[in-house]
Image (tube, rainbow, N blue to C red; front, top):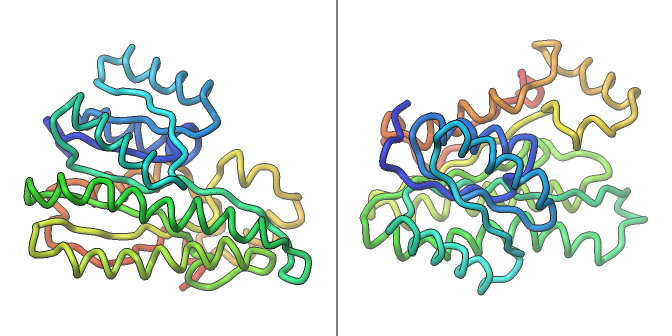
Length: 247
């Protein structure tokens, strides 16, 4: 995929899937804003690596739960590069607990980061994309938002909400030549999944028809396709990348 001349903003880019997405976009020629909230060290390491490879990128810290902070980040990218072509809403957190034991704070925090954060970012880039009559918005959902997961009522609700958000945005901005799609990963090998008990990991593996976990680079490859002009006629879709887990 050739993204030379394109400008991308990736939230939650400090590791795992976000790092893989930033790397794929940069190596395809895009200038990339690497966003992080708390994980400065890995975000800076990614920025340094991409710059050493000769790619154009900038580092930005923001709490995307804040509408104002999201807008300030989008404005900073426009000030640096003059436009925003691609938005990847990857930032997300988990606060797992059975519903009867889950606190209101844990529910609210996950919804605020995963769902409202995505809404804030779309709103922040919407004017620039509409004015340019071009944009690619890719939201990272999850199979949890499609099939549900015990102990993740907050996370599943946020990811299901992202699917509804994706379809509404796709309809609302289609006439502006802005596409909006969601990618729904299954069990991907990241630091987040690595901390799960081995018994849980084995249980998931038994349910995956392809009998293996996914790689962050495989998710990034799908995002890269949706960000490219080869995907210009795809919008409002939810693409599962889960080895068949939720089919």
